[in-house]
Length: 363
Image (tube, rainbow, N blue to C red; front, side, top):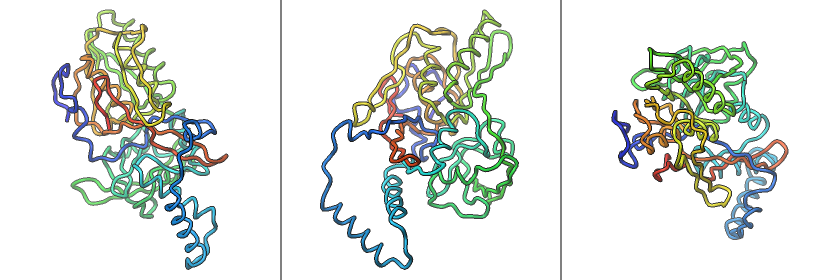
């Protein structure tokens, strides 16, 4: 739970602890691996032969005795999906257009409703609506549960599957059923649009004070943010304070969040990642290119602030650079690596966790 105070000496777990009951966001920071698998890099682990034998026996029973014939490729894909879905809410099997959709969400524009989703209790949890998207304009809120799409129940559906169902031709319509705390479930009909996002915008509040809104962390967000901040500094050379709004920002590209923190601190660590494999362990530190090391900051967050947003808030908090205001953040602090299996198939696997400069896990 975030208290409205300056956090130079805050409790190490105060920033994100109240959000742990929520499942993690699909807007994870993603790493894309080459064709070689992580195991090939590190040395393959021995297979548990007894368990593999049991799996092949189960597969044989299904192939011979299941009431309907199912082809081998489908059965094995079900098995892969089951392994990954049992690990955590972010690991997933991707086939067909799902990998293309994943790339769309981090690089630019796509046709859809403009909502980032995750999984909670078998339903689809709205992490955050994208600013000025069909979902945002229709009043969809962070924390809403989507329980049906076009009258089709989606309990136990993977988040990537739900995202695929909500996408379609621009101008086409889709109906979603929303469950919101304290209200009866209700339907909303939305018209799909091309979701083209400018992730940073700014404005002057009054002489000496300015506002910066960051809606997502995309590949070019770091550059956009630096340009907007520099324009604010040029327009008002006596800037006394800055409000950084990360509410309903579901995260995105790690390097963009690192660049943003780097604009406000001139030394020290920003974030580190730790996992089992050597290439899943890394750290990021401040450079000498700090734009505004001394301007007082207020950072706004809420339960829709996830992943890269929490990296920014956590780093600025640990360095004593910002007053954090709002409600508890989402609690998404893991890195997913995309490992290709074939030309149009891959697995998205959680390979490491984020840690703030003081050593706190965001997860």
